[in-house]
Length: 81
Image (cartoon, rainbow, N blue to C red; front, side, top):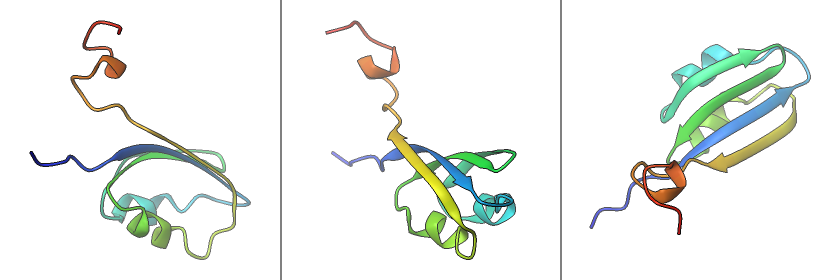
């Protein structure tokens, strides 16, 4: 059985403008949204390319949570257990 890479929903707050373009180009990053000084996206697999895209920008808040795999009860596709 092949293990799927972990997908995380990430929210980062910056002291200034968000580095949206750099983040959009980072490997494994998708669904990038910028709202003022806050950036939200999905990161699949390693955080390293995402973190490298943040280089040179002051991060004042960082939060992430795993995205439930499709087809699991957590994703809402099955009965509650």
